[in-house]
Length: 421
Image (cartoon, rainbow, N blue to C red; front, side, top):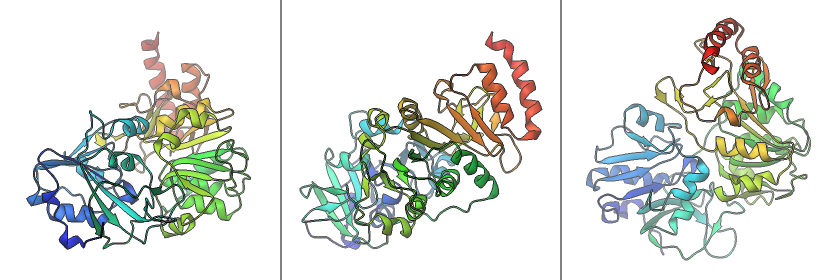
């Protein structure tokens, strides 16, 4: 199919009343298509748009009321939609969402996807992401593709040529980029504590944000590290350039880093382009408990908004504001516990910027249960909770809280202890 210009794209002729439109997630957002969607929003019938982590300014609260927004979290710019009451959130594990989306419970009528020419021969390459979106393409009525040759061509990203395209549109914008975060002293101290727990030869999963980024930079002196993660950032490049990343000891995908999406800058895209030592994979691989359990020394490194004295993790709400997601955290925590010599690490600052403790007596909204708790890290130390009683967990968690909060937390535990009898 020949590519047309964005000006020639008439989305109201393709989208029907009540349709759910799924768009490429994160840096895989097809900007030419999503901006066309919003420009034509007044002419669209009532429909819903399913977004993921959002790093553009495309979707705003100024969208017409008959356009509903949905997601599995409120990450990035999606948080503004959530605060305005414009975002319906599905609190699903990423591995489950990948199976549900496009099925009878979350039927999808139209997909907006970003592609580039394939690595070899005819067909297309997914560029920066191989997530559940490409699987939905095969089950939907309408597929509109943005053809963007500026995307990196990644191993594992090639897809079949014979897809049911309704239109192919020439890209008007470069791929989205996410600049690396600025790392402060707190993040660096947390990262140093985490790095001390990671052995040479470990296989890493790292979440997105300043703390996972700091940890990757703190691991550049390690040896023979591997990488198997739902997402990758510029920190992956730092590990590779330092010689710390070889994937040599992986029982599966030896010599190859595996990721579902590139969430970084042009530095990461240039590293990934035609790199035989990096492969895009879908959630059926990246988030597979069985597959990860076959990797020795798998270390899941994620962050959180708060953790309570029993090890329950909250990664969704900051106060009464939904700003996070269930995402893949529980998938990776449980998989790390099944990996031989694996470890699930949740790292966070001991206090918020305004001085409130992020180690709390009890988490309000639990993302990761206490039964899954393993290792919690702050700038003040490490609390290893796996195999520990509730009282011992509380003692260890209080020890890594901000000093000024330790006594109040101890009192809260003592006062609440009677409810555990």
